[in-house]
Structure formats: structure tokens, C-alpha cells
Image (cartoon, rainbow, N blue to C red; front, side, top):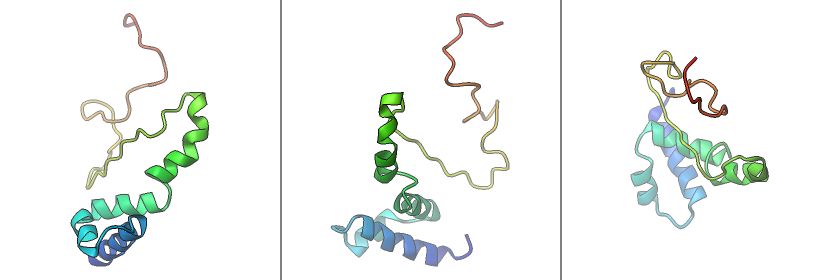
Length: 103
């Protein structure tokens, strides 16, 4: 991020575009920090939220859970997707069935 104030103003404008029934004060109360701004920008770009769910809904019959997502912004973390002990995303193959015993 090179200009936090400009980013917040742009994200609030985008938030209002995505939610036309909101006021400028409501947009300012919702988009309060760079993390909020990033989520609004990602949603507007169709990478997060309803637009992404709509684009992925064709894969629901293939076993994809649509409408369920989690996003997290990690600041100043050199390895946010790391194994134990922090362990957030690298949990082995999450598509394998659970083991009954350890090898």
C-alpha cells in the first residue's frame, strides 16, 4: 500500500457502489482500515463474496461448497502459510479421508 488515505476513500466509494442504499457515513463506518478496504476491493473485483460464489456455483454438483469462505489478512508475517506450530493452511492433504491410525 502506498497511500492509505486514498485507498480508504476509493474503497468507501466502491463499498457504496456495491451497496447503493448506504450513505457515505455508513461506508466510512464500515471501511475503517486497509484490511476492510482490501476486502471491499476484492469483492468488487469478483474475487470474494457473492460474485465469486455466483461464478463458482456451477461446481456445487462436483462437491464444491459454495457460499462458505474464509479470508484473513496477515501483516508482517514472513511465512503466513506455514506448518506447525503456527499452522493455518498447511494441514497435509485435506481431501484425503481421515486415518484410523498413524503409520
